[in-house]
Length: 454
Image (cartoon, rainbow, N blue to C red; front, side):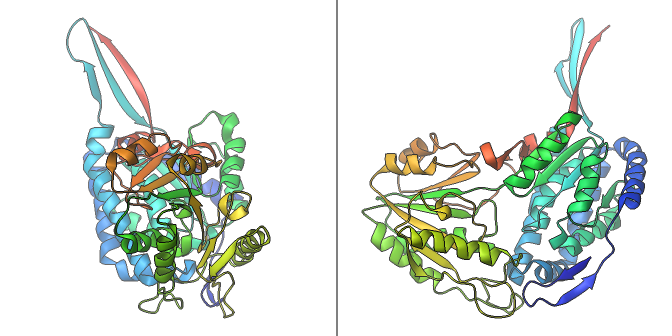
């Protein structure tokens, strides 16, 4: 399988993909290894995962460079991602004992009662290319902490990063027969869906998530789906520091080229501040440095997938044909590599694909609204339900709006962020199940109830 650099279309290297024989061998090894791993104390597992985080920090430069070379994100953003993964590991390991230790519900009396959190067994983690360290950490770290073995399939677009993850987990002390990667594209994913595994956890698009869910549903095994979003943001009329808010929300839309499930994908602005906000937003976007992701100061690197440029161009064309105006961008950049101009559209409506379908790229529509009720109706007019943001000066007003938003995560005066302490979960086409938080640590266990009568 060829690994191609999206920034210059050059061949980085060629790797051997797995096949039915090698996958079967890896799974048989994991089945045996998991039995011993489950008997390793939680304290030891925590120390091993902490060592993994230390190794990522020690090798930050090389990890970030490899990540940038195969997905095209600016080097500093790759470093941010690795550091972010280490921060999540710090929280997960610090709270693993609280989440995973047995709990006594009734400690005395004729019948004592307790809960024990047992591992699922072999967890299948089919992961995404846009944030492989972060979305991977959401799954394989708590899965390993809970005593599971993991077959980890990185996206074929972030294979080398998957290999780095495997290397440093093994170096940290995770046995080879407890964590293995499956190298390949769709065909290898199909082999994993056919296998007899004990839990399936996928991060990626709604279409693929739906397919995976349908394939594994008959197995009656846990299935967690962290899918896409069409995440809305509302700017109310009482904001004062418009320039700062415009800069922050533009970053929420364009960071990592907009290739994030929780990127801001549509913006609604109260009519009283609309003109000033749009002006400040455009001014901010025009400062973005576009170019080689290895160059210092670059904010917009290459799109990971070549075909995404055509998809984004079609969204622009659809919007313009229905009355939208392009204030900046709108086109693929004519240079070697997968580059697309940061694009801002106004006069948009929900008749346009750009306000309904996930873009996953550097494009945003900004729509004028008359009041909070109009904004709320538009924000909830979606099949997705991952995150939603409200910017205003009044917390009570923000909380009232947030309480009516059908999303797994809501923000006040911030956007596009994830906290390890809070559950990360979607609704509707954004998936189901939770990672992160105490809930996410327990997502990779099966509770067993003990009734003990002396």
